[in-house]
Image (tube, rainbow, N blue to C red; front, side, top):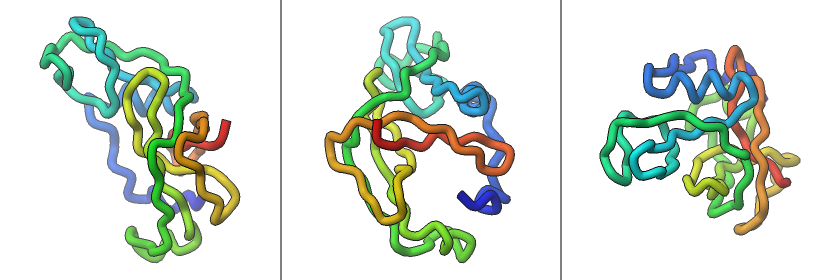
Length: 136
């Protein structure tokens, strides 16, 4: 992956910082509600299931199944992305329950199958490791 792509990477928010720090340790973290035990992704201040504020971060296994995907053929983010085409954006249903948007890692042009097993793979891009997925 082209390290220049994150030249304008937005710093983590106070809420998302634990997630990104976990990625840099090659650990996929999910928030869990301590009141209703709901696991969710992306970082929030309130549980999306019950509204409680008692949240904690826990390590996830990083495994799931492909729910859907889209192969990107146009560099919507500008010319720096031209070298990445085509690339595949995936929705992964994690074993812990949440659905996560990510990028599929495979040989150029290869797309996943709906229902295919997937495993998180951390890729260094600039100063940040990003959670992508590949076939498990």
